[in-house]
Each structure stands twice: as structure tokens, then as C-alpha cells.
Length: 122
Image (cartoon, rainbow, N blue to C red; front, side, top):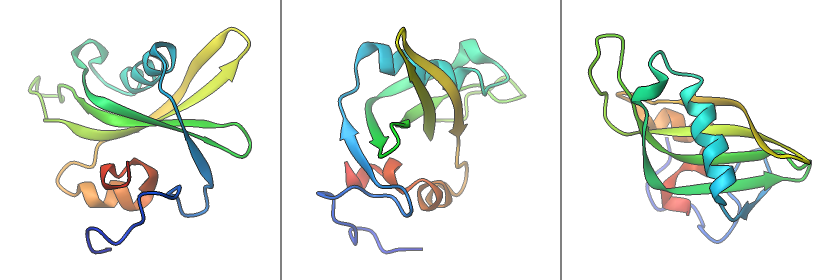
């Protein structure tokens, strides 16, 4: 694992994924929330906490990062955890393509796999 503060926040952060930050519109945020909800056992329990950060890669693919809280299988909230939502863009707007949510006890593993979502780089 890397030491905190070793990344340059002024550059796109992603190993093997060159991307630029883009603004998060209401439509893009809604698509990201839908992507996370679709990955949960109890989609209606999802709660989101700003800020959201979005990135577009050289192919036009979009990823949105943020934090969400949702109920687990026992009905209890697990606490805010990071997510990365994959968004497709079409003429009609944005569409949820999928999401990775969590990190649980080891959130640094999530950030190692999804470095652009590490809030220290925003």
C-alpha cells in the first residue's frame, strides 16, 4: 500500500486509465446513484454523501466516484463506503452501466483498485 499524501492531486490518477475530471451534472449524479442502487440488495436504502467526482477516459467512458451508505442483509446500515459507478452516455442522456460499492473493513484496497476515487486526489 502507498503512503498517504504521495500522489499528485493535480494530475489524473489512475493506473492504466488516463482520464480527465468532468463536471457532475444532476443527470450524471442520478445515473451514478441508479448504478449503485442496482448493485444493492435493498436499493431503496441507499443514502449518498457529496461530493461526487466524475472522470471521462480517452474512449469517452465515464466513471463517477462518491460515498454511499446502504443496509446489509441483516437490515442495518453499514456506514458510508466508497463507490465507483460506470456510466454510459447516449443521445438521450446518461445510463447506469454498473457499480462497484464497498471496501468494508479494508477501504484502502478499494482505492488501490480504483485510484481515481481516492478523495485525497480530488
